[in-house]
Length: 215
Image (cartoon, rainbow, N blue to C red; front, top):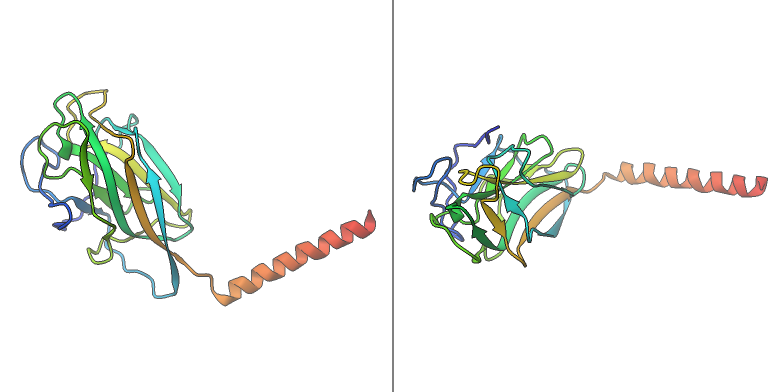
C-alpha cells in the first residue's frame, strides 16, 4: 500500500523540509505532506482542544501499510478537524537506516485523508538519540493540510519507513520522553441537539421514578 500524497511542496520553517521520500537519495521532500483531498474548515462554531500523545518506545518497521507497523487510534470526537501537529522527540536508527526515513502518518480510520510527517527530514544519516522538535504546534490550516477524522472520531497514527533498510526488523525507534501534540477542533452541537439531549435525560429520570414507585 502506498500513500496518496498531494502534490503540495510544504517547506516547514520550523524543520527544513529536505530529505528522502521513497528512495535512498538526497532528493527534496517536505517535512509535512498532505494525503487525500484538501478540505475547508466548517463555518459553525467549534471548540479547540489539544492532546499530547506519548510515543516513547514506538518503532518503525516497514513501508506504509505493512502489518508489522505500529498503529495507534486516539478518539478526538466525531467530525473533529485536526488543525495542528507538534512534536518533541528523540530518534535512533538501526541497520543503516537514515533519520529522515522514519515517518508518522496521521489520518482518519480509512486513510482517505491526513498528513504524513517525517520529523527527521533533511537528516540523511544514521543517528542515536537525536532530538527533533517543531518548537510548538505547526498550524495545518495555514498549510491547507487540516483534515476531518470522520464520524467515528478516531485519529489513526501509523509509524512506518519511507525506505526499508532492515527487512522484517526495526529501522528506527522513538526514545523516552518523545511526544506528539495534536490540536483539533470539535463541532459545538446546535441548540436543537441540546434540547433533544435534555428531553432524553428527562425521560430517563421519569422512568426511574416510576420504577421506584413500583418497587
